[in-house]
Image 1: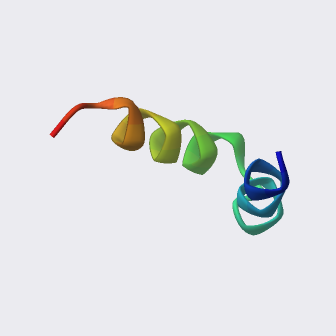
Image 2: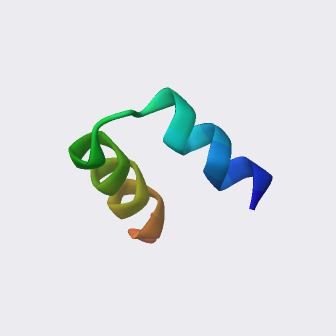
Length: 28
């Protein structure tokens, strides 16, 4: 949870947050 909180702190905009999550959810 702390990691997610850091992401929310860095990415204040929800758009950047969703893009970040999508990129990590896509299997490479």
